[in-house]
Image (cartoon, rainbow, N blue to C red; front, side):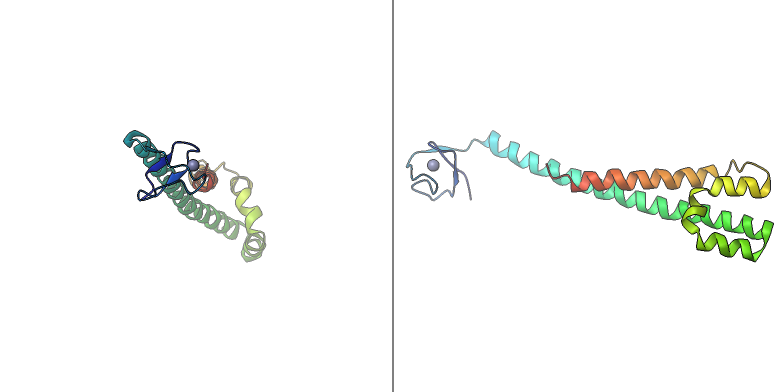
Length: 142
Ligand SMILES: [Zn+2]
């Protein structure tokens, strides 16, 4: 219990205190319920913010992995179908580059702009952004 507020220095003291642990004053102000509940609300809000951040981060990770993998597999398939196993191998070795330029790679491989591919491609970037936003939300303790 920390509900005795020193009238002299503002230090919070246990309810059973007879004098302030900080300055030794014997006068206390009872901490108002409003102030206590405001402090509780602040703590709850902070926890809610952290939980929301973690949730957003988790959704971002799942979205990024699932959509990113779909984009990569799609690109690898197109490369394999168009140029054979060697192209597949090169694309696998350079997987991050393949992923970043997936839409362009498929476009130049097939000669058709892969409109449908924009869905998983953009979704994976949204996932990456959510990961960043969620991470900063969860870590911000101020
Ligand atoms: Zn004091």
